[in-house]
Each structure stands twice: as C-alpha cells, then as structure tokens.
Image (cartoon, rainbow over all chains, first blue to last red; front, side, top):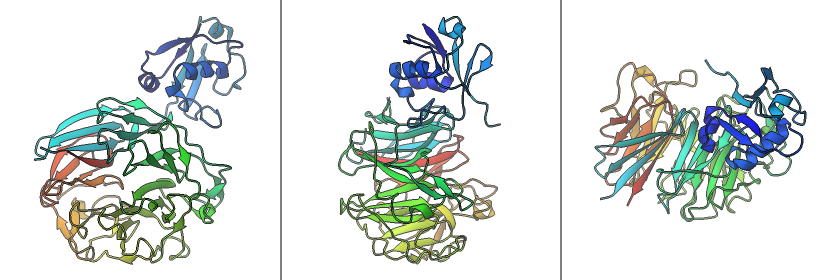
Length: 98
Length: 371
C-alpha cells in the first residue's frame, strides 16, 4: 500500500483527507504512483502533471524521506520506505507569492 | 416574481448573489472553490440552472466545474484543452516565435440553444467548444491557424481570447476578441475566421492600422441588433454598424478612453456603459472617482453616473469581464472591482449601491434574470 499526501487544494478537489492509500502494481515510481492516483481520482488529471506532456507542473513538488524527488525521472524507483508504505510520498505546493 | 442571480468570479473563489425582482436585499453564498482563481462563470440562456465555471491556479492549472442546480452543487467535468495538430508559434513579448501553450480558460460562453454546448476562450489564444456539457473539448482550429496567427502577441495580461459573442440572429456567426490580436468573425459556425479590425488605430504597434495586433479589451452587442458592435479598446471606444467590417471612434467627451469594460442596456440598444480608467500605466479611475459613463445616443455623448459610487480616494480597477446587465424592467446594471466590491443599480445606472464588498479582487460578473 502506497501512502500519498495531497496538498489542501487537491484534497478539496478530490473530496479526500490529506492522506490517500493506493494499490500500485509493479515498480513503484513517481509515474506509477501518479497513474494509480489519477485512476482512482480522475478529477486530479491535469492538476499535478500536464495532460499532454505528462510533465510535473512547475509549481508542484514531490518529497519523500526528507528528499526532494521533483527532478527525478518519472520512471525512477521511489525509496524503499515509500514502496513499503513506511513513509508517504508527498505532493507539495511550491512556495510562491508573498 | 422573477429574480436575479449574480455570478461573481474572484481571485480566490466564486460568489453567488441572489435577489428577488426588487433587487434590494441580496443573499450571498461562497466562497465556492475557495483559494482558486475563478476567471469566469456563466449560465446557460436556455437552462438557467446549468452553470459553467473556469477554476484555475498557478499550481494546479485548469479545472472546470459545472452545476445543474444553479450553483448549489458542482461536479468537475473535462479540463483537457489540447490544441489541434502541431500548435506552432505566435509572437512573444520580445518579438521572437513562442510555442502555443495552454494556460487557462478566460471566458465561457454557453450556447444560445443547447445547455450542453459551451465555448471556451483560452490563453494562449484559442477557441474550444464542448457539445457534451464540458466533458470533452475540441478546438475550433480555423481561428488559430489563420495566416496572421504567427504574428499574434500577448498583452500585459497574457495572450487571451476573452470575448465570445454568439449572433442570436445567425447561428453560423461568431465574434471573438483577443488581446492583443483584435476581433475575428466566423460566418460558418467557427470553421473559418477572418480579422475584422478595419478602422482601429493603435499607436503602440508598428503599423497603427495593421490587420491584427490591436489590444481589444472587450466587445458587446445588443441581441436585437447583432450587426452593431461596441468595443472598448486598450485606448479608444469604438463602434461598428456593419458586423465589424469597419469601426469608428465614439469616445466623444469621455474623460479618458482607456478602460476594460463595455456593455449595452438590456432594452435600449443605443444605451452603452463604460468605466473610464486613467491610463494603461495607471489602472485606476481618474481623480480617484469611480464613475460609470453612460451614452444614450450610441456613443460620443457620455454622462457620468456617480450616485452611490465613491467619489474620492478610489483607486480600484474594473476588469474586462466584470460588467453585466439584467433584463428586468428597469434594467439592472452590475460591476465588480479589484477592491472586492460589487456595485448594482436597479435603475439603469442612475443610482448605485454595493451589494457586497470586501471580496477578493473581482475578475468577472455575470447576471442571470430568473423566471
């Protein structure tokens, strides 16, 4: 079971609490986790990564295990602690504005 | 008794105000979609309970909610706006080619005949249409692929398609306006387009009378007379009597002809409204006085409407989609400000009152006259 923490605005959009738990098949990567997240909550399609390019939206960040994984390739394996469910995968809004 | 519903889009959510036909007491609901920018909300003319909203943020992009009960509840529909074919390039601020990139929906225009058909004007400038209630969107690509497309450039607010006028007398005819390209017209329901900017003069472009490149802020028509168009351009208030084939200036005695909004009285096709703004460098009313100007002669002769509006120390702006009229008798007139007030007049503009204040900056105001 993969644990994903969503930012507030996406919680309200998907009508969920901060943490959602997902079953993800195969290798645990950013891409596979986001695929599973969007499959479960289609309303999130296009809000975390671009509909067309599948690129991470510029002001969304991915953290896990005290590391910024935002610039990791989408098919790179996530840390074992995320894959085991011990640690969550955090989707975070970049600090922007004043 | 009939009533009125005012749909207000702001920088941090949507608000819905409702009143009976007297328009004296208002119920305010919201914020809907709190924290999100709501560029525009609009209801279907044939089903007033069907509303569409443009919900977006710098973080999460575009979302598109739809209501089937007049805004009490909402469901999220399709947010995939994919340009048709290879997008190509338009002109960037520095004159270099820049790829077309979808950023947000500026304006939603529901069909005059079908509640499931709705048009979306987007940034970077393009026109999309949905025929399934917003679930899926298809670009009307004949507009963006016009020969002049590579020469279009963004205004300060981005390269937005912000106005869509559907001709009530001719279902094949659509007018749209883009900052900063100008006005375009289709006579075949959106398949092909041509620019209709003859008569416009813009000193801020290399050729002031160019075919495209004009920063048109807003156009308006009265539904009984769709060949007569009115325009608030970056500078200049303009009029066309031939469906956009030619334009002439009607700024007349306005204190400044810069501004964003323009609208037409519901029952008097030659009664117009604008809100003069000091300049493109100073986006606030002249002399700190918030004044709506009304012409009862189709332009050129304007009178200030001030009763109930702040006449000192007022430095708000009124953005291009933030002015609307209802169709009651007498005509109600409404506008929202970047200071968060929504002002209303139940007597065609003679007297004004703030029906809500201290909202986030208002981006859009639309009015539904309810049966």
